[in-house]
Image (cartoon, rainbow, N blue to C red):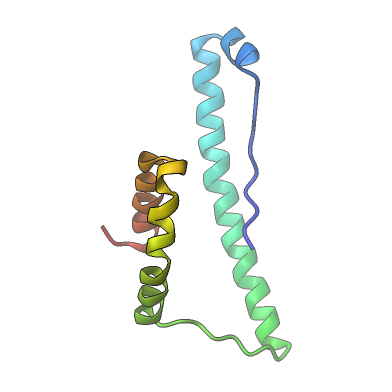
Length: 103
């Protein structure tokens, strides 16, 4: 399970920062995001290997099966896209495609 963390500040605080400070915070958060995701991936892989060593049987879906699952949930995504926002859904799929190495 991936548990993302968020850094949240009030608009009042953000607006009180100089443009240079806003840029520094934004860049620091981008760097922290990249670092945290790398650490998380390593920890997930270590945990999975530990489970396998302890005797857990792990089944990984072939790409074709994952495609079938994605096709099954597509109507659900389409149904809720209007509530979430089409741009948000498009951005999520774009990011997933980049992570999967597809376009």
